[in-house]
Image (tube, rainbow, N blue to C red; front, top):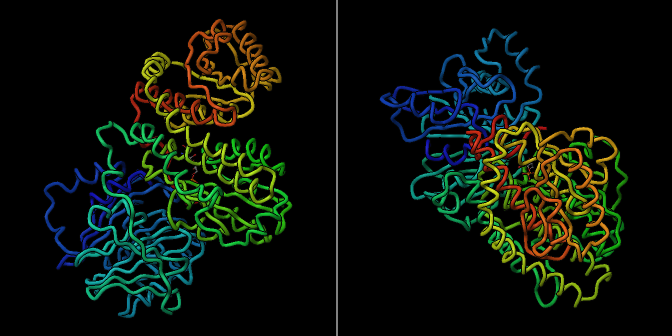
Length: 596
Ligand code: M6R
């Protein structure tokens, strides 16, 4: 279980705990902080002997990350143990009800209510009890429940949070994702919405919340343990940065067949794609930045209006949508609550949803009308890297699919664009071979108080992404700006020696923008900024403007983010390392944000 938790720790690392069903009842240990704290606590402890149990790593929502709020949570008798991922939204009312019954709570969590409810409702049939309790819960949850009176059984349930079952040889697993048990089996069953699975010696059984047998999705995991290991790197993130050429190539593979772009799953008619008259792109964080890049390509290729919006904002306003609106939902995990809710919001208004996702069968693709997977492989580092590049490539495929369906591009033009995309893994490999100087620069910048990032056109989302990487990894103040906005306020931030990263467009591809950016650099240089310029190889005009020059290969304008983002990922990782931070697990963050 500890090995499994280690692989899931990227999902949350505020505290960890285990419960083992032993001959003497439940043995439980919980500890605030990283999994290592729990492991240290367990050293020398006897009594954790059994063949069934559960473990948890937490990302705190209700209650501070202290021992008593760590999972598993138990009922008053200590016979019931529960771990939970998600949020029980009506927990307060349930807690009041239980307290009125005389139940004493020992934590501040929403999860503990489930343990007490199970104990109160239990009548010798744990699966039925869990179903009954689930029917009372609101919100998003994956729950795993045991009862000491039925020691050969574990019951789990899910609503809007992920849960997969691993089917091994005389052994069974339950986890939020397959990386936890991939070392033991690749044979997996994914649970659907509002389903309960009972695991017993006789096998497993899946029902809905009312006890009716439920359909499930049985699948074979197509990557192995080595893909989820660090492969000789100090951090997963560093390995994942290096995997970017492969991630790009895998994302493109198989999507251009007989001269046409094809998606992975299309549960809508071709005519629906032809009828699209407006596109919304919704996503969060890095995925949102990839969406900003998509806007330039989709508008250019299809002449469709494209709006890009943060999923958390889209969800709570009244976007004008109808059945001819295509909503492109981008999510690495496919389980981000903000994006999932935005997808539901869009579908309620009859819009078609196309998901771009890195996780096979996750909730967002399940609830969408069409799916394009980014085949970037598992991304464990909390900071998104290879999935960002893969998302950009997937966005371009969507743009080309739309251009093809609407006839705004001839098939030879689509083929040419696709062929240019196919050159990008090699271009990214080239960048990766030259990042040692970026690392050295990162070490020099480790004591900076702030870094600004500037870009125009597709360089603007790159600037935003560079700033996000630095904030989340190095805990350094960082802001990305559209360079044209500088004179409208941000230039007041410029002071002597402030590092400013500038993402230059190609002097050939975008001569006008290139000239404008040179002017912007002059303005900040005149005010004392230390300029770090990312520019195309052979762009000699930029040299006098750059205190530090980072060169990237010449590529078509729209594809520039694929090469210019890579040095910024390396820079942020190196600054974070120089400051002594854990690059894979930045403070306060979790890989999958399954709460709104
Ligand atoms: O799984 P998703 O792509 O939906 O996640 C969206 C964001 O939470 C994610 O990109 C986040 O911003 C990353 N930590 C950025 O590195």
